[in-house]
Image (cartoon, rainbow, N blue to C red; front, side, top):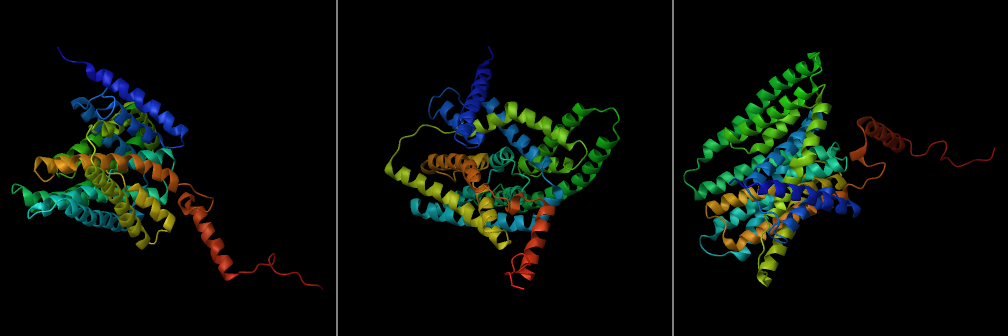
Length: 423
């Protein structure tokens, strides 16, 4: 008889993530933190009430698509285009720095004539960025439309592409069946595909939403979500660049159209009620019980510190080079810390090819969970702002502020500030 245990598992996840989400809100932390902790508590690491299965895994993968589609819907194409080159620099340094540091950490704990490839693969895992956690946190804090928020989104999407290139190069060294040239052509083909489909489908959705006189609101959200699934499938199936860029691109194509806000509300409702809680909890469910040793604890601490600092230094340093102010740079660096499901996918690939030994599996998994939990906490701290915070100023306000600063610089002493004189 077919087992219906998955129904109870989903119910426990929904109730657990909500309960821990409320608790984390009481502590003035994003609800995402509670959802991640709920997965750890319910999973094999603690109570063992819920075990990962094919249905939960499939729903969690769908959760990534929904979150990224929603992020695209709420992103301004103009703001994203403005952050384009800067985002590339940030993503590039956010890949290079973790790759080097991850390799160096591996060298200290893994020596031998053939160890260099495994150490390099640890660096590849370090390059991963899971933007889903950051997106949900920024949305919860109403900070996703900020300049730094848009930059994080753009840099994370570029980071995924660069990470795939690194993964392909390293796995190609261990697996002769991987043709690096073909993979690079596929990535280039996806970029061309995304631009062409984006131009055509944006016009289609804009025309349809404007000229449909039947007020078919429900069909808008259904067709839009189906389009996101098709884009995610095509990017993974035909181009091998993962489903995240495809889903984000679909949302970006629909953003700015007449019914975009309605579609966004419907997608967010579906995400909030089912998909997102399962996605966040699934990361904690992957944590297995293990026996501690001093050497293992040392490696875990080193990996966690390295994972946090490499993204803050790499991405935050790249933001400083691109003329963002220190506060924005710190926000961008913190927003790129989470490794999440992306690092887990990379790690699974490495284990399948024999590039990741059992000694590193548990520490890396704990490091992934740590970075995923700590990212919302850091974002909560760094997004405290005052009235003059450039991230929260509208374009008009920012322009007016620049004019005021320019006026003060040119006329440092106004009549009001001038000293009184006796007549």
